[in-house]
Figure (spheres, rainbow, N blue to C red):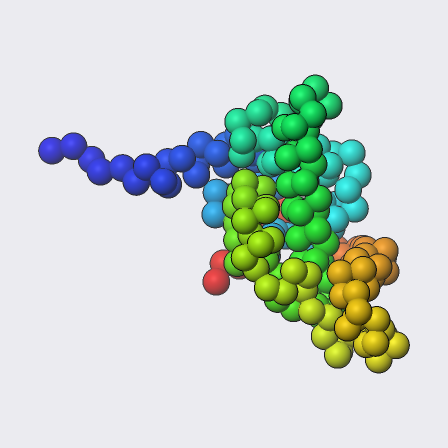
Length: 194
């Protein structure tokens, strides 16, 4: 008797290989097919959020790979229409990475990256944006400048939350460096699965 194969799972595994095949070399970590931004280790999340050249290429690996368009380096060779599609997906994934960083700091809640895998974020950014509320995560009152920003949040929540990215990167980088000094050196560890 033949074995039964889950075609969706097989497609996801193949997509993950295309999307994450270079991540170990670029970032020192290879996500699983169903991983979300919430599953990324702090060091990897921090690198992605910084958007250095390797992190940028890793996100383009994801965005292009999920579409079968090749490695991140191929982005500059795309025609105009696919390039715009890839760029939109890139910015959406980068936003979700940075929002997750802020969530880990305890500044925001309710982000799409908590509910959708990295592969889904890259493949369906417009659908996810259209169907997910809130469009940007909510800034929570525990954030130390909440009262100062409260009035602006009502008028332009996206601009306010995104304006916190530089501060979040600085605070998160400091936290990761301090945490790394407390742990013995070794390979990056995946966070525990829930």
